[in-house]
Image: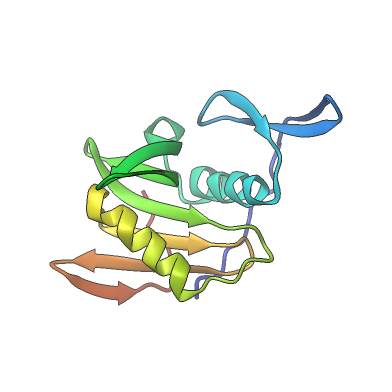
Amino acid sequence: MITIAYPQPAFKIKKEQGKEIIFDECRKLWVLLTPEEWVRQNFLQYLIQVKKYPPSLIAVEREIVLGDLKKRFDIVVFKNARPWMIVECKEMNVPLSEAVIKQILNYNIALQVEYLAITNGKSTFALYIQQGRFEWLTNLPDF
């Protein structure tokens, strides 16, 4: 498991029609502040502020096609114009189970990245993949 020291965020949050929304600096838009979105936004700030990942190279909530299915990944980081890392976010009360690992591995069939990470905000696990071999990480790589 990876220990994440989340930075103090400077989130822009407001209410619209009785619901809280948060500004996503990567997507450049306001989104509904769900429990999963809270985890995603905090993890994005960790990647940007602590690990120094450029926001312009981070894709959030985009559609990918897996066979006949259309799915949406949470976070993909690009490096050298290629997908480099996939992050799957779950809300805090969702355990990081084998099903979550299978979900991100399925996304990787289409994206072929070097790094996979899963987080629920409390727990984070990551894998480095090289030539079909998997290595569990104790830290996420710096950009």
